[in-house]
Length: 162
Image 1 (cartoon, rainbow, N blue to C red):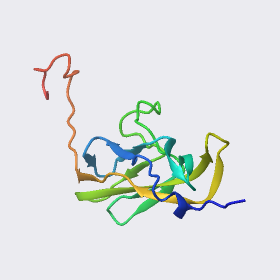
Image 2 (cartoon, helix red, strand yellow):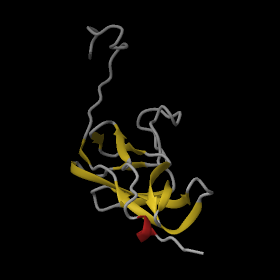
Image 3 (cartoon, one colour):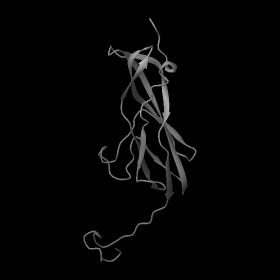
Image 4 (tube, rainbow, N blue to C red):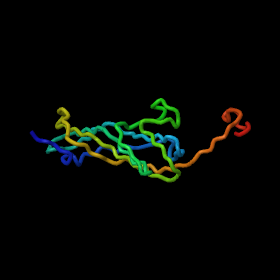
């Protein structure tokens, strides 16, 4: 029996995952920013050991470097606040709180488990994981000021404080 390794499937590459965040491109110091990934299981066709083959890549880990000296490795890609049933600025499984104002670059690396199949046969797992980078996010963290108003400014935009 032939053992296929990660180096054997080096020519097979999934489409890179994408990271997004809410709010888009800015965060309020001290409040959760919702950072999440858009990535799913992918099957990439090609040739392996001289035969028609498919390699299936399944995302299994997400490592975020938040650019502020902290990071996290998580087992979830997260989702939008709406998809998670949360309100804006609620903490999510993938959120991060910035403690200082400034400009930051968020980097994400996604770990994939790989499996292969030859000529449409059953998928066979490959030992180890492959880690690939997603896009970078460049963000600004700053403060926010709030004011009290005497009515809903969307209903009465000329009201005091609106």
